[in-house]
Image 1 (tube, rainbow, N blue to C red):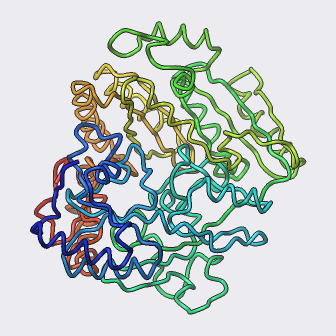
Image 2 (tube, rainbow, N blue to C red; image 1 turned 180 degrees about the horizontal axis):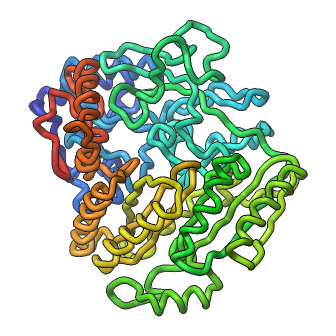
Image 3 (cartoon, one colour; image 1 turned 180 degrees about the vertical axis):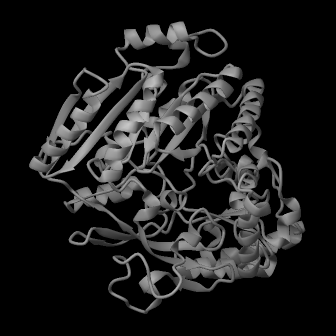
Length: 525
């Protein structure tokens, strides 16, 4: 990828800045060749990855190096784009929102600083991946389970900061953060919560502090660089029972939500309940051409044939219960009785007890996996995906309404419909996967138009995405329009106060510092 300079810098100024950065991290950790820039581009980019080009990358090894880099960035006015591991596939990976930004790659900061088995937490640096932490827990025989997302290739802290979701009782990953250390845009270092007291022994067990609580200020934000955080982990249960129902009809999703959401809210079911549609299972069995080799969306008659052939329901509920065996059995009886009021077929039951082997790909048991990334091969070629992910109330009416809306919009675009709902309690995340071949220009143009329509029509209905790709950060931000975008104004005031030079992730989530606000708007700067 050719060099795109940071805004307002001459080539000579840029080279001088890189030399000074190298004096902090060492010459080998300032990465500025065309190949380096390619490595930090968006590998799933919907269109030309050069829309969001980095100018270089810097990889520090310590919080002291991060602070020094931030101070130099202020001196040279070089915008930085921090990433933990850069594996945020479908949302921009490691590429920056503002073209020419320098990627601040925190992957070398990969120490597991502490694991407390009794109180169930770990203290991690941002470069620690899910596989890293899992292997550490296994190697040390620590009886704790992680909450892992569908794609566990990335960073534990990075996923939590981007509001990622896992599928155990600890499934709201941002809620598992407790006690953050962060470098502010001027290079100052803060610790949130009880960590504001030096050497406080309860920093990672109490989620508040004294006075305002700032932890979530650093999630999905450009207000600071998280260099350390406490993460709560789940005590390994004595037993676990998986209950699997195939739900026959598309329209059944309404009663499924109305049956399971109250059980989740009441604590009978404590995991995040994932409900994928049939295509979420078919994508793991082959590529699209293996099931339908004609252009346009797979027709309904063919969908019905596939469901019969592969013995699938339109939806699948694979619900897992955890705890002492007696408690699990009692909860299972309640769940099965509730489901039996609508579906006479009993569930498949899979028991696990301490000492049994764990399925190597079971994310509901805290095992990291990258298998769901196989969906990107569905279309063929250089496969990629985008996820359109609005949040709706966890009621059958709201979920059915959202399903019909996205179904029609995606159907009108003649694209395969791949939806899922995750019940997190009083809310449901609706993820609609849009899969494409990166070399199919016409297909990508269709996806971009489709994404625009999904955002605007869903906003008209009163719902918004909870995370999105770089190219739509401004457009999604614009849907939060109460009182003439009061939240955006608040974020901008705080951003400009903390970061007058605009060096930290300008444009992230549509929040622009005054220094670069003239470059905001549209799909790219």
